[in-house]
Length: 587
Image (tube, rainbow, N blue to C red; front, side, top):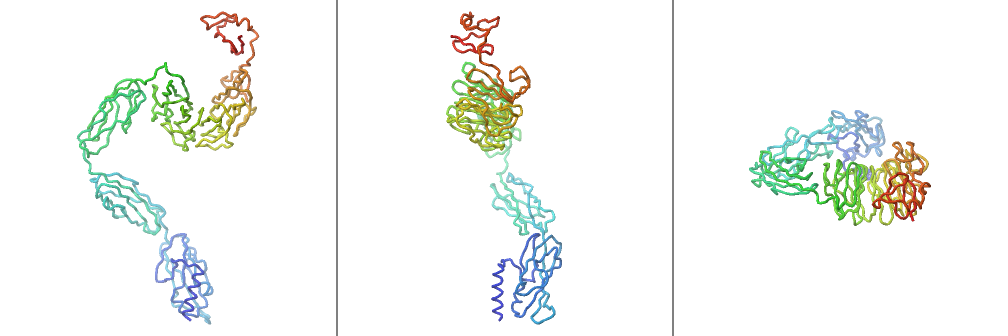
């Protein structure tokens, strides 16, 4: 019969899926964390008695040590119970198991059988006063201080371990980790909670060779000539070679050349100065630096671009120079220092678009490069990290447009792509979500223009589509409603240009139309009232006061100037001319 009961118990346990940590030994004291739920089982020796009929479970405090089944039940169903620690308790609580034999009218015990529990608060986090350290081998012992959370954790003791005892050992010293340095190298010191929670913290320690004071420092090269805007890194060597020290860099004249604390030197303007380096113990050396003008003059500048308090100059061979404000690295020279003279940035450049806080460069091979502020993904590199040196974004591009915080790219196949700030739908993708990587918007487009918060797209058929902010009517659709998807507003257009909050359109018949913000009269219609529908500024018709025959017979001065009613005007050429805002045909 005993064997049968033992077999029955095994079957029931299997049915209940009792885990390996189920507790069945009333001689032990069990530690349980707040919120933890475990199983308790009648002890094995009870199985040896074959006439149990009922059991009763009781907790000293069911609000703290909570039983799933509290009270009386049949032996077959209640010999297994679950207990949950509801909250922490200082001291020990007991679960009691009473039992009744078949035919008895009273409870009796060989006990009762009592299980002792301590409800503990586990450690949830450990931090150390250092995450990483670099120390010389002769720097003495290091003491790591752990902070253990929560403050009322039941067991705040920890264990210390070094991953490489040849480099450093660690021992507990009144709760601190006392690290003793052994040899140069790297080790990781681990502080682990002893409460079984598995929580730990680590500190990476790099042990450096014994500190040796330098007797001399030497800069290489001892003299150098660079161009305005050019950069180089000055290097130094210490004597003796195993000496270690920190160094400080300085320039005798920051107006001629600057140097950062990594030894990166940049030419600012023409002149000569010295770049100095000094060790912690006072040893010095210097390099004589000559800064020459950048190799470009006005005779080979073929294209310029301005925007955001900076200027770009492109030479006939594609060399690009830049100067001006550089707070976000928008000049692309690898720094955030303003340039007061043009400095070389890139080569093989075809065109530039300078936004307020970022810049786009289109190279001759059709690749686009970007630099500057990137808070909203306007650079299109998949991040929101500012770039001080241009990064490659796209290929097969024919034109670019940058303005406030978004960018437009027109590819050679006529497709338009956009990225960056999109709060008003200026990207035209149907959303107001910023894009860190360019998304495709339209096809069959011949030119694009980005305003501060709106965008203009001129299609190959001469139609104009617009999207984005419309508070001032800059979209020209007759409303002041924002548009997240491009809407068509005009046809027969040959050129578009978006200002900050207004738009201009040049039609194929020579007429000019404008809409949007007009606070300063920028629309040119003689008023300061905003316009939500494009108004005609130049009508493109022949001035009735100018006769074609008269125009043909007008005298010229040096072939350049002629007079009509006392006005001095550029000499008209054969064909269509715009004179005084009117179209004049000269045969």
